[in-house]
Image 1 (cartoon, rainbow, N blue to C red):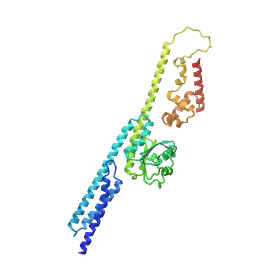
Image 2 (cartoon, rainbow, N blue to C red):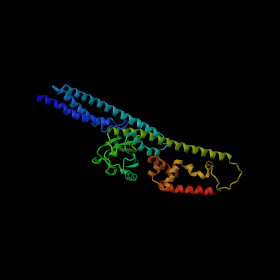
Image 3 (tube, rainbow, N blue to C red):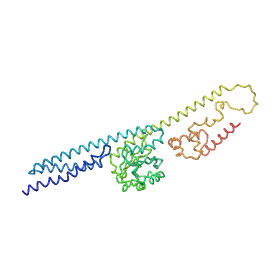
Image 4 (cartoon, rainbow, N blue to C red):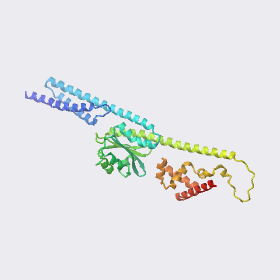
Length: 389
């Protein structure tokens, strides 16, 4: 009789633990569609462990009451069924995220300028991937500069203070920093313990009260030009799925950003060509309509116009020498702007600015920026004097 009591006690012990585990999983599966179960990997591990214990209890249930054995088998079936439901729910939620990312990309396709894209990206990242905070940054030389910080309303009580700090911060891309690694490896990252991770920028982590985050580089043309960061402040920690989601978002965003920049550059070039052809047409019309005069000029006396000047209106000598973009660059140089500032103003790369500066110096026949500014101002004054005559 004692041995029978001992044999029956084991299954009853499993019953109590099984009911607790299965109930906790059902609570998570009852969450609304579109809201992922909390820590699904841990839930699946608990179900797997419970399934093993239940099956072992069934194997050891010889001599136990048949009703208890049937109950054990029902629990085995229920644990297996919940694992299947959890797996299906994870697949569904993953597909839902991908669907929302596609919808976000459609929204971003409506942006007409790089500035509009940068402003819209963090909000769309939060909406599509379920993050509570997101930030987009750009790489400038050896530093990365936060550009736009977005928070789901009501999620961060210290939003204003953190935003104010972010807007005036530049972070060095130092050796061993996780962002430096993102640039080098061109892969996303999951930082589960940023306070103790030696690769994180500690001031950013402390001010943002970040317990875990994911990040991905933005790579439109083979090189990283910025980053996307995101976390779930006040909610469940970020996971490997979140890392994959931000990477998917970053890859598609990079393609859209590249397209918008190219379209903008093509539009600028088209406008320059249109202006050039319009100016040429105007010059030839003036040449065609100019009346011939029989005049006598004293030997050695300067003529009013040189043969080459017939093709150039007096007010456009500089335009004749420089392209429209080169003149824009030169005007910014005259205002004291650096190459970096010129690149930002004209939405072009710093390398393109350097190329324009090189062409400007060659065309003006000067050796440095100061001489170029002096030469430019002389030409402007000369054109103004001629226009006043």
